[in-house]
Image (tube, helix red, strand yellow):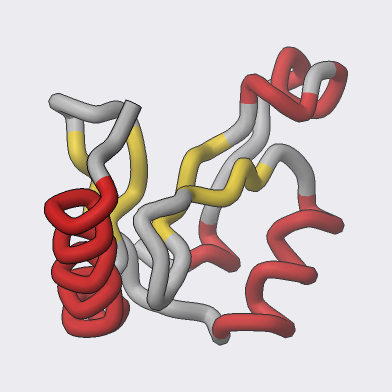
Length: 86
């Protein structure tokens, strides 16, 4: 499935926090895509990427972003090992 194919419920359209969670590149964050406008902004920034739904974490994984997310995680882990985390 691609970002452009996402469907939005009335609840999502009324409350942006109820939208689809989609992985972002080069970070461990997700973006909430809750309406056609936010989907268009996501596509403009990152492309109309292929996604795979992750039922365990209730979000859309983007295989094309996997390498950048893994690199970010390694750097983040190194900082946590050096400076600690709370």
